Image 1 (cartoon, rainbow, N blue to C red):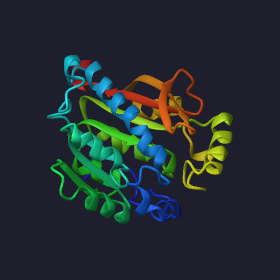
Image 2: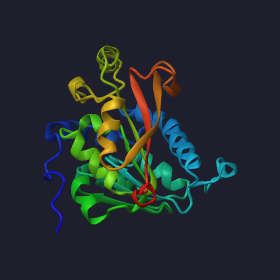
Image 3: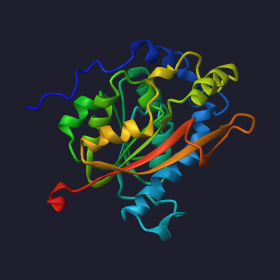
Length: 257
């Protein structure tokens, strides 16, 4: 039996508890997680465009309501399922993975009565990746990496779950002085849960790319993300210093030989 990439303690317990305190508000678009709801259009566009660029879906199907039909996606750090459900509504087969039983319960409860192909699992990505290597067309971690103590272990676990020629999609804050100030402002404006982010845990795109390379994953795209609090909207932007979206593709080792 292969040993885990890391021990099953790769979680900031205090941070998870802090996020759980607002669990009841996660599905309120005007609540404390309003920015996460607003990020969904960009997250969906990132995934669809990325899968088109790798030939997993056809460009002419971009606007179809079932554009992700037949695509297997792992949503790592899914929380209460805000992105997970959005992907499933586009007919993807989605597994939502999170170490918080409280948040997964919220996700399962919200899903009831909907015809969505979602399985929610409470587990660490390091352990899950051992049992499910190269299983998914796409693995997503959106606004998660910055909350994880051992980011290398987390990212390698994600990459291990991706099929050859499959994609990884990550959105996370960059570690710059601009993001340091921006996070303080976000607390003041109550855009994010106060004290839920530690600037020293933010990771740069180049650092992510180096780690993913260890699992044969090439970073092919990095785009800046910009949030306008007064309009409660996200958009892609040239500037990557506050927040960014990253797309990496796992190359087929056999074809490289």
